Image 1 (cartoon, one colour):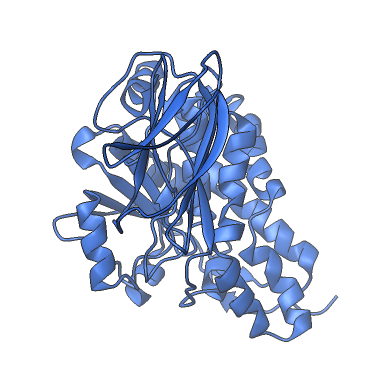
Image 2 (cartoon, helix red, strand yellow; image 1 turned 90 degrees about the vertical axis):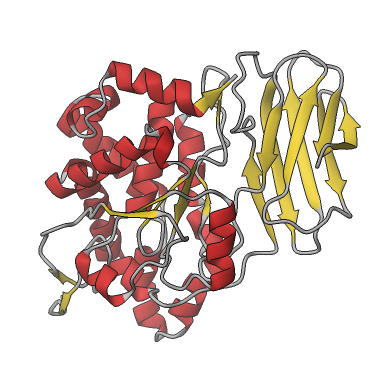
Length: 362
């Protein structure tokens, strides 16, 4: 085996460093799932089992849904009916005025409605800024949209981006990056928003061994995922972030690292799991970073010799085995996810109940 190269990078941010500074335009179409309107609570049963909106570059929106026990669903946008259908349907809506974020109301003939938008927040300076909510739980509730967001680095946000985020009521930004990352690429945050450092790797060694094979790269990523679960600084950082989730005054909240996929990915996986979202949905949300970062990652790999690109690709990817290693670490070190919530995140049963009451509808 070839001698391994020593570099000044943390294993958990090595992938982000490879793609640092690269951005890409939003993909041609982005899919988001639904949630109830964040501004009003509902205790009605929501009959929708699936609901998505897909925004396209031509300004159109495709809305899909499935609902149980209803015969008619009305689709509204900007206060007017734009489409309707039966218990399941797919419609494309055109001709709506440009806006920061186009919301739709899916109104069944009985039961709770859904207020949904495309998950991606299209920005000039970030490619992976998206709503953390909009998912259905195993017991039929929905995670509110417009409350919590996840993102990649915010250092390249433009003035227009910052204005948009201010209009989206971003009140708190949680920065999960290391001190060296923050110094090299300081966050740009909307006017009036609080910037809170929640360094997942604070004080950890910055000297790690670069992989020389794809297998070594995969191993590095799975070990990094385990640290995000049981590492002392990781537990402290995520405890800070979860404290913000439960604070109405802090929201809307965005948490981010550099690529928005590893440290950020585990934070959102833990949040969705705590709220009762099924594991397959949690995994799909985690893997979506591969789609949102596709152009940026392709550009990074294209700049390398093929042999080097093959070694680095696992560092840029998110893969099922990475997230699974995190959940396996939960089981190994804490015994159960509820024990992880209590011992690592500082959330007892009452805290979880209140978080669900605050962030779930239906």
